[in-house]
Image (cartoon, rainbow, N blue to C red; front, side, top):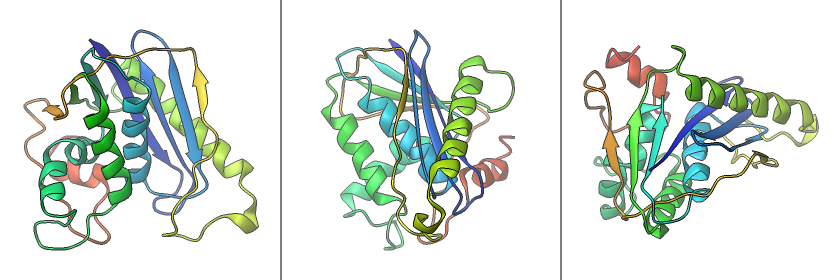
Length: 209
């Protein structure tokens, strides 16, 4: 089994520079960023890039401290797809392009994809490594983006260059991802259309932090 930790960073949420990263527990890492975005976009991008970078038939377990990203990639995704990418109330799914890309990436893998929630900022080595890489990528994106070319808040972000550390080959299978969370995680509510609460806010409401 391949185990990968992912994380996202936003210097000013929403609208600030973002960074994302994944760290393979067996070696290898990758990160990237954009001039503007949100925490949710950064977390989803990290998950997407982790799946894309680990093709193959071996099971892939993604650890994330973002309950929002995990739920989007597992529980909520299937209902949204079956409902024409609309929420249960008929509204547009937020960050739908990234979520659909995650759906396609999972379906394209011959091996299964599973997700496990981990608590952030409590000394988890690989989570801390992903957090550091994502933060560095966000700062690099902020520093290198021409001021007059930075998109306004709410504009679709353009992803900057990726940074790859080491190499890793993956293994996955099964088109349907499996959610693994700790007993404390509970069940999150589907986010509403429009300005949804950040994943950290959702987690706090569930007493995860």
